[in-house]
Image (cartoon, rainbow over all chains, first blue to last red; front, side, top):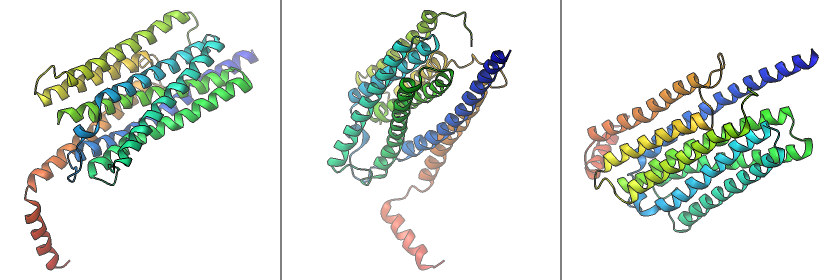
Length: 197
Length: 123
């Protein structure tokens, strides 16, 4: 009886936590919407500097897109593996998620570094301010996600894969999938849209 | 949480979602870089945005299992509401700024002159 009670308590807590976290993600969606609006309005205001078509390489963006999609996929399957008590598989996939996410962030920082080194930083034009704010905010979310994923990995090795761990990990996968969804639109509007203006 | 579904059956959903997302991303990329639609920039933009929305829906269903949870904690309702807000922000901002741009369509020199004149009048 007591066991039953605690199981129902946990499942209720899980549902509530998931819903609450989902609401946070929705507020984040509004944040990204305003940054997208800013970028789309300012993207032709180059102040005599380079335009989007001159700066962005669609092939590079496609590589980033595929890396982040793979990372999103591995995190989802990791959650599934933990749920079915395949703990080693889950931990392996969590590691893959972290490695792919770190690769994504490194490549993005490399691009930022190249732009700044060429003198095309956020101070160059309104267009570049909009670009760095939008893509930089996404990158910051990725960084926070990586720290979170690392903490989850530490928790799993220190305390084992408990019911609490599974509940927390489900929230992480929400966050990670959400970031991939935002990236699809950055890829389409910023990087592919650069070729169409 | 349903226990009667197997690991491999759920895995199939993820694999389908992954492959569909990958194909859609590559399709958008090829449409733009290979210029499959020629010089029709607006049409191309509209089509790749459409593909992005299709990918959004696929990922929501396959990865985030949207529509699978029970009331009263339904994520779908809040999501649709937020998408509505996001569209109002984006389309509304673009509309207003384009209108402003159209109405203030004077040369930078003329604008400078106008601003100086207004400045002389004081506040």
